[in-house]
Picture 1 (cartoon, rainbow, N blue to C red):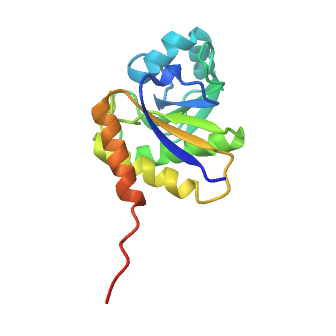
Picture 2 (picture 1 turned 90 degrees about the vertical axis):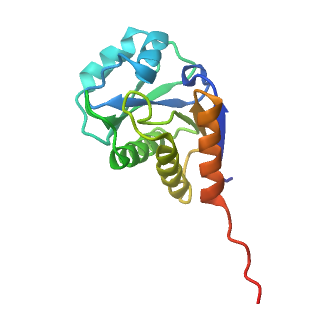
Length: 177
């Protein structure tokens, strides 16, 4: 069964999936942005578990409990160092590492935010291209993932991801002679 890629406008902390992805920093501090929202809703145990695992290298990802969230796990994907910005390469690596952690746990449903576009300051359009390319390449191989959600905060971001997906998956028109 092919993996479905779905786009949702909303709050990633409300997703009832096997795992959500936290766009983390290498110190795994969950103070602001999506990370802060996850910590507030999940509870302090998630930050305590992060403190035991930190630091991680840029582009790596680790999984923790999800605390009070509907998800079972949170995958913390380090797309930036503290007080620095995300890069195309760090987003690519963090997305790939998140998918690898999901495979290790035989996760069937995973929700991604737009990694690196909040406090990390990366372009939303470029982020969409990078993340979707990594996901599309990943699902070409055997995978436990049945559904991959991209959960975007507002309608404008949702449209950017939908358009990027359409462009990346469009089949060229057949040539006529």
